[in-house]
Figure 1 (cartoon, rainbow, N blue to C red):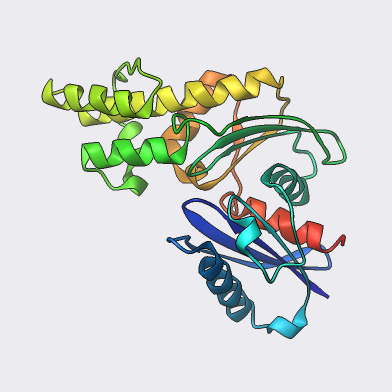
Figure 2 (tube, rainbow, N blue to C red):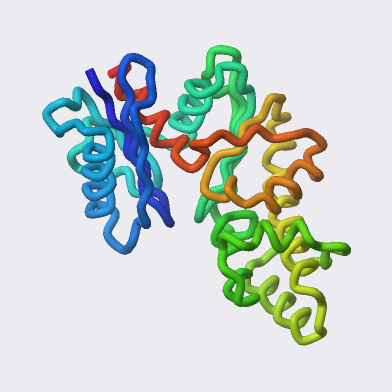
Length: 255
């Protein structure tokens, strides 16, 4: 029996398939303006990638901010539960999760069985999220996937004092006008975002080992800034961005 998980995030839609506690495959696409269409498209894409059809799927669980729009799923579950389940599935030793997505950031504490003990979430402000970094990348005219490489070349990270994305963008524009090195500004952006995320982790007394999930886990500069702020190394798997979808698929197998 094959089970599917679909995670509709604000920036990307992810799908995962599992069978007998084995990950068969995943797929990621931009969400776009229509979350239902994104859910259908990413689901069909992962089926094609793995080489199975819809009739082979026993159950589907949706998650993410657009989970309610996936009207062909058997049920919807929260990101917190799905990320916890996904991380435990990929690495049973994981006790903490830091998930930085497009529109929110989360810190999750797990027990030894992979059950959520506590969590904290930043869902009312873009600071400390992927959107924050995206806005700054646009202001600096740097491709989003190049931000991490630029950041690691910094010799003196700039200080960004504003915690609001709008005001922080104005600060960055002033730094550009002041001819500060682009690398230093980007490193400062990552340190500012990391400080916001670290607050969530400290709030729940997160325990090691900690896994980093979400699309921002691809950003080496953000990982470095977070590790510096937290004081320990983060585990980043090959399927960090798809972790919520993987957890949803695992939960589908338990329905």
